[in-house]
Image: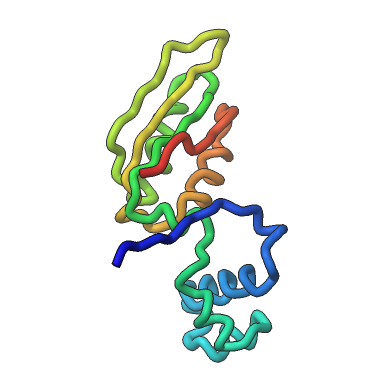
Length: 147
């Protein structure tokens, strides 16, 4: 039998609250703050049946990127050490850097493309990008592609 699943990227604000609560319960369980499903669903305010119905079908965007190849794009100010800072943050998260490309700076800004493999990452991609955006001189960042 062929898998006919279709996937959509949807803004959380338009989803029924039960989906958001299922994701929250999964996050609580994954963090180890609560050890069993009963406590987690009670804490977020959903039934066990709702949790089990949706838990395998809804994921935060960053969670679906685990074990994937992701191409990141940055626009950075041209000064010594900024690329090194970005690479160090990626390395600290245990992502495997596959390629790095930095264009020649124009008007004090350079475009950088970094492709990473996320299988061994110790944090989610959203946290990594938030961390990189806090580096002084990083002006823009985005995910260009995911495989």
